[in-house]
Length: 272
Image (cartoon, rainbow, N blue to C red; front, side, top):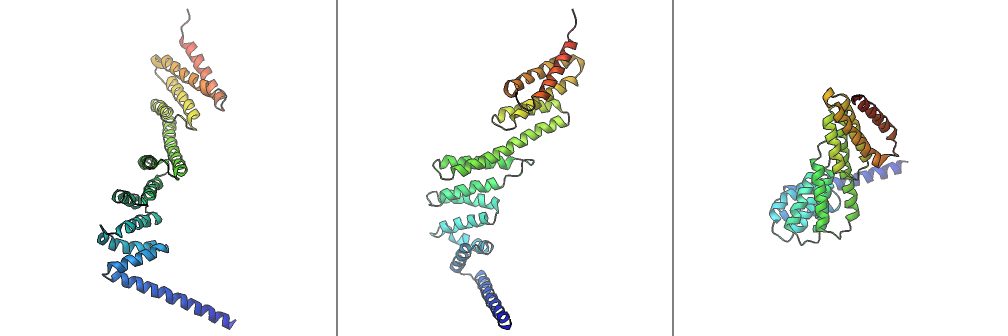
């Protein structure tokens, strides 16, 4: 037992000494004015995944290597370090700079891809502002346009689908919110925009139903002079729903609305 404990203690001391030596070496190079040593150590740290330490050294030497043969590799590592640290704002920006500066590099396609993925990673959840989602879609499309034969096409298409799904969800929830707060005119417009903008959406059926429901509620809550006209509009939306979704789970509810519309329109029609 004593010898096992002794061996373990010696091993810990050995590991600690290596750690302390490496730390002191890092600090020494960090304070040194020799950019070559800084570059070499940054390269070594990058290779073993010590990205935070490598980044500190890179930031010191990047200005010194601009225009030099080593700059291409350094600038790619610099951008990729931000990527690996999940600082996607800077990763996207630095990969774009790399593309512009080294258009003939063997790494330019990878840089372009990682730049687009960086913007993808910045896309927020659907309930927030979606400007960054739109930017990410543009960047992914730009990548495919530049590299139509890329091996990354399947992955890009999957990510594009995810981003479009966010935009669909956002637009659909906005329309639902208008309906929820009884802003029926805004709800109708939002549903119509959704149907136009997202023809293949999984929410399309619900959007057709929501548009009809909003038009119906607008009609029955209108001043008498506008009721008949708006009921007819709602009935038109019901007919559109019936055309595409007559066997859906919402058909029964839609039929009830249509029946009430017919009754109200009959009541509006004067007897001869």
